[in-house]
Length: 405
Image (cartoon, helix red, strand yellow):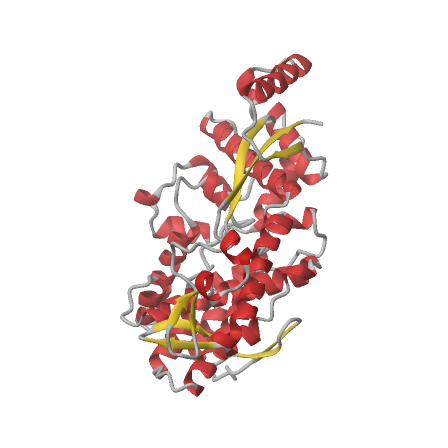
């Protein structure tokens, strides 16, 4: 039975999105990709912005749409992109986030030991490549940045790639934070290629400036919003505590997939096919369901941490421009140990300090290059007359302390 594989998605941001070929259709249909419908793009940010319930699935499809635009623009400007390269670009951008765990980043810091979502994405792509008889080989090469034409790799991952072009626009739409709304389609129209490197034509310079300013704004206002940070920290601690209790032989109510990760030490060395298959069964639901159960557990720490997230009674957080004094931290810890008669180690689950930093433009990494009318290619910081672009390439660090209200 042959089914029609040229289906259309209706996206609230770009309108109709067409699936470009049957490989992409089959990848979207695959259970590994469908899992992304059950993983929110912005983790627990909906505790701050109630609209932020969109998923990794939305985002991946959006990135693919923008990639289609980019390929058309570049071909129109007589940049040669073969059919195989085009197909590989669509597959690579579609799968760039496939290794994300539940609530995006909390997993990486708690129950999987130092295995990043990029590495897990790579495992998924290699597994799919076997299933699809090697048709993802070129996509994997581009995804890894190993292809001999750098601009194709830059479209997937750079300071201005299709991933950022979609998530800034999409996240600002779903959070209602208008300042993040960039004109990604206009930016893409300004792209060109010189010596196999991606450049932006000079007339697009103001759009690039707006893109960088929007990125900075979205980081401070949305991705690094203090309430979002507390929620993510609490979730990481929930999973850490659950893993700790499991290692002591205490049984916790959780799905089979989550139980596997709580009971086993998973690192890059032992991340095998079975682990990948189990990981592919994990999504946000496993975590939410577990927390709903665990908020009634006997363990003081686990119970309270889960309760805080489920009922949104979070810790207090204070942001400072200077590092938090150790004495401040100690005072809060002592107060908590006395109030609940718990140990210092237990109190550290609820009282802690950390830092966040944000750099909208990293001039040391792959730069955003501007193609001037004279044909000369210069870095955006040199080309832009806006002082703020130079300022945006300096990292800004803030320090915070969290403690119970």
